[in-house]
Image 1 (spheres, helix red, strand yellow):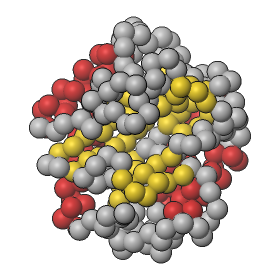
Image 2: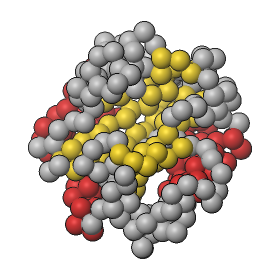
Image 3: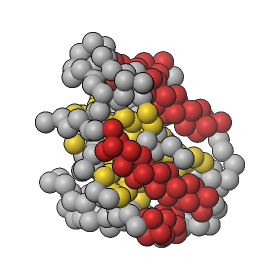
Image 4: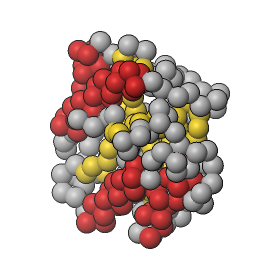
Length: 255
């Protein structure tokens, strides 16, 4: 069932979204050559603690997961697409890093992700990140009252495929509210004019993921969480929590 949020609930989600944005900024500012992924997670934990927010990631264990997730960030490096577990790996010059963060504040959730490079960026990595960001912007632009979920999916997919990027099958965005994952699902590719009609008060986490090699294949690593590209090519991820309103889409996880 899709929950329609009141305007006051959207304002509360905006407060949670600001915490997510601040945590992502802290992680990005901490990232540098020689810094461990655990240090990024610690930086985000400090932001959540200062805001009085909790993490919907920490301890999260869906049915398919072998263990609860042990961190407040997902940090996915190079060929990791999503769900990377922060560990003692120290960032190297040229690494492509995707950071995903959630926060729950006063019972409402926010969820967003950003990708960036550490040190000297490879041109192809910069192009891949730009593709993910353009796809996100296109998806947000399509998130208007009267459109359908398929319009968002189509807008994202068109940007990705035009750029020659792969789209990991089986992954996409989702509704969000009191829980991090709610109905409806938001695919990253689809047919326009299909699916649920968008209404004022719906809130969606829109999150394109792109694979540099152009294929859609992926596998889950031995840790049971990290999703990697089959061809070993690099991946990028971008995400915002977006409210559908009569005045147009409202990004709730912007700074």
